[in-house]
Image (cartoon, rainbow, N blue to C red; front, side, top):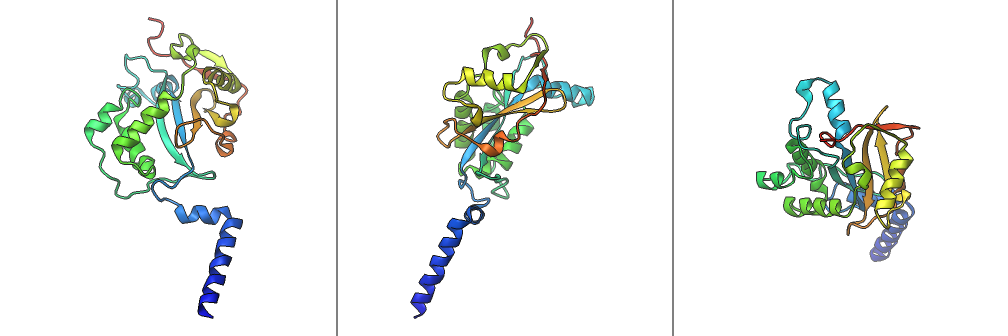
Length: 227
């Protein structure tokens, strides 16, 4: 009799979980490695540097906003659920050593950002720091930057859809359902691309619906591109 009651309760629990996907997600909330897909966020560096300069010269990062020309840089690679996302999955986080951080500066030219991205997002990947940042590098390699944006010489007025179209054209297999264009009031800020765990483009309705709604945005030029 006890065994029958136990089985009945278990069956009811499983039925409730299948009827309520949020319950299943709740069971894995914040567990390293338990997520559905990645978002690769590529920041338009000239917009970041322009915004920093507006806040005052002392706020301009010398590495990212110095003489070296940067177009899109990696903001982060974020584990996602179909609805929502985990953060800070290990507290305290496993230590990120200086050598691993330094090796990422070509893609993420901001030491503080690299440490933050590991603590907030890398700890949710289920990987240790070295493999996580190798995955970041692999995700970046999976995306081709549209050639017209690589060395932009003059400010460019553009629609969010035109930015989206350029990425779709440059990346076979990418569709508008796999990405979002980010903006502030005036400028392009970043492009977010959704990738499966094996770094293939995939749909992500929750990300797409947060895409920029401005009619027109500006892409500031790449520093030094006209030289």
